[in-house]
Every structure is written in C-alpha cells, then in structure tokens.
Length: 390
Image 1 (cartoon, rainbow, N blue to C red):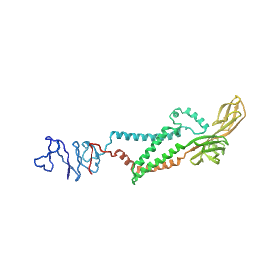
Image 2: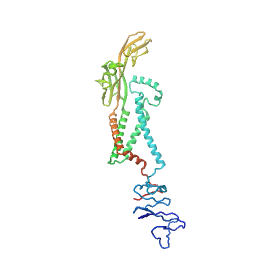
Image 3: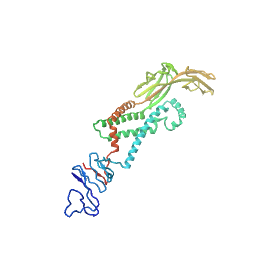
Image 4: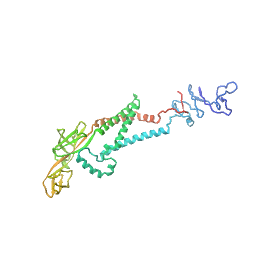
C-alpha cells in the first residue's frame, strides 16, 4: 500500500506532524519542513501517488477519473466519482455560436429551396417572360422585398450554402480517419454533404432558368451565352384546358435538331431540360405589334393610324373579335420552359450518400461519440491545475 501526502499548516509551524502514519518520525519527534505543513494519509492503489496543493482533498484514483482537474475541484467530488474536464465560459460561448450559425445556415438553405417551389421566381432571358413576371411583383410585395421571388440570386441563400461547404470541409480535414465503422460513417456523411453542396454551387454559378414565348417558326435563345436555341414548330395535339390537349405535346428543334417533347417526356441532354409549359394565342393586326394572350380576355391596342382597337380572344376555341372590326390573324403560341442544371447528378448522388451514411452514422453510435468529443474535448492545463499520474 502506498500513500498520497499533502502538506498544510499546523499550530506549531515549521514542523511536520506525522500524526497516525505507520512511519515513525525521526529522532526528536519532528523534522523541519516548509512552514505550516502537516501530513495526511489517504489510501490509493499501489504504485499510484497523487500530489495536490494544500487546498485539495485527495481523491482515490480509478480508471474512470484519470482526467484533468482544477485545483479545488475535488473538494466537491466524492472519492471514486468520475471527473470530467470543464470548459471555460468563453469556450462554451464560442461552441454555442458555432452551432447556432450552423443551424441557421441549414435553415436558410432549406427555406430558400422551399421558397422556389411556393413563390414565382424571376426567369432569365426572355423579355416576354420578364414582362409577365413584373406583374408577380405587384401580387407579392412582401415576398419581393424579402428576396423570395429571386432566391437563386439572393445573398443570404448563397452565403448559407458557402458557409456550410466551408464547415463540412473543415470538419472532414480536421478529423483523423480511423478504420472503424463510426469514423468511416462520419467521413462518408461529410463527403456526401460536400458532394451535394458542390452540385448546388455549380448550378448556382452557371445555371439558367426561364420561359420562351414562341410562335410557330420562331426561335428563342436560352443560357447565359445563348448556348441553346429552341424553335417551336407545331403542336402534335391541339392544346386545350381539359382532355387530351391538357397534356401538352409539341415538336420543336433544339439547336437545329427536331425533337418531340411532352409534359412527361422532356428533352434532357448536357444538363439541359426543355419541356412544354403553357400555350396561348397570338393576334396579329396590321400596323400594330403582335398581342400575346395566355387566357381568354380582352385587350386594347392603338394602331399606327391612331385608332383604338379592343381585341377579345376565346382561348378554348381560338376565336377572336375586334371592336371596331378590323382584319386580324390568330395563331397558337407555345410557352417552352428551359432550365440548365449541370449540378443535378452530383446532388442526386450526394443526397443518396447523405441518407445512407447518415443512417450508418446513427446506427454505429457515431453521433454519440462525436457529441461527447465536442462536450468533453481536452484542453490545455493552466497554472494551478494538476494531472493524475498513470
């Protein structure tokens, strides 16, 4: 049996009082030592000696409490209780701020992705589509001020994705890879998230989305540099608000190559997606620009000679009337939606990886290990702290 010894003041001062220790004191009954010291006996496992300052009550050393402790901390801990390192207030504040920022970025990214589905978004390119979108700004003024009608170019949306990518890359590089199931699952989870964010960022930087209003034989350019030319040729089935014509099907030429597209059979190639979106009527009057109708309604127009003409179109039958009567020509037009999404395959693979690796991470208990490492991460010793031996 070995003993842990600490020294503190006695009433005589300058002497060491051996008390009830099994060791006899030297000749004279006492020996000089540091002023104000006495000996106490505490049993510890053989070969283990724990020296503490004069403010600490010795604690029995066990395999469960071999951690860093601060001076005075073991006064509040019973012998044999596990001792866990404590973080400083500043460290706790920094950790809380980091996790709050992470949760905020995830929430912003999810909210922005949902906003794209529930609010009309600003299209790219086509002037007719932009003119139609200007009416949406009046219908949704609050959402327009918050940037929810143009999420793809919103600063907060792109900043949230960039911050998540930096955090995931830092976590992946800072964590040593160990060949156990929980570590591999965590590495796969972070890698899948980075893959998804890479595809998302690729589309954010080079993507394109918009509608092309095309009369028969008319062409429209899509893409930031006019990479895609779409020419509308004809409807394969006459469009209608109900029945077979509701599922739009048409023949178009994509970069000069004729293709047939439908709602359920869009054109997909090179990251592009081209599909029918809507239809309408084009009314042409002599001496006036063409009028595009997306629904049955009446519109007024001024001719070049100053006359004011009211044009009424019935979309279901494509019949037109004017007041006063003037010669008119009416034809169908197609609204073709084109989108360039080069990062879509990466996002799909990343999403599958997130689901699989996330499930494996939870099953193997990696989430508990990771949270424990965050809560009880070792820190540097400060003056006044001691460390268990062994």
